[in-house]
Image (cartoon, rainbow, N blue to C red):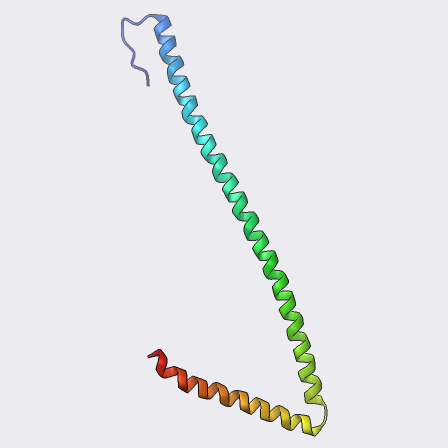
Length: 111
């Protein structure tokens, strides 16, 4: 705050108050500028994240379509004749066996 002396004239008091008001207005202007910059950065980040989420949504929709088609083909194969059921059992057993072998091969590598 401005220093008040006993022998100061009213015009010098007004000048000191005016200088202090200008200094405080400059400080306020710099704070407002920083807040505006932060708000613009937040807006930009929110827009980027919304675009990212929209992209993920379309990716999930395409994966859902792919999985739905695979499940339909699998169900059709399982419902059809006895030969397809044998093939399905062989494929399932082969996949389970492959996972077991991979598990035992990779488990020593982790330790």
